[in-house]
Length: 120
Image 1 (tube, one colour):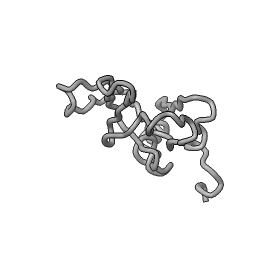
Image 2 (cartoon, rainbow, N blue to C red):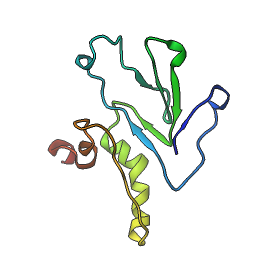
Image 3 (cartoon, rainbow, N blue to C red):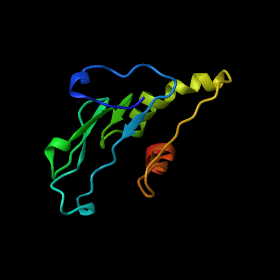
């Protein structure tokens, strides 16, 4: 479950739910936006991120998820933290799904399929 974190609720953890939301931050590429001083999305901890508005620091927003993976997270870390617990449910006949969402070319299939080197 994802939620926007208010200043008053910053230390509360999301409740357990049938739907879990995990976010993976892809590496920042400086050539994408040469005007921005740095990446506008940054991880705060293993469940939270913030989106910075460089024009107005008061508009910086914090969000909390069931899991947050930074740009250095490996496929194995993501699998072990957010996917492997689904497999036992599948094996006993329950339905389950892992849904990847993001813009075209953002690398959604790489975490699923890996590269020949990472699969070795």
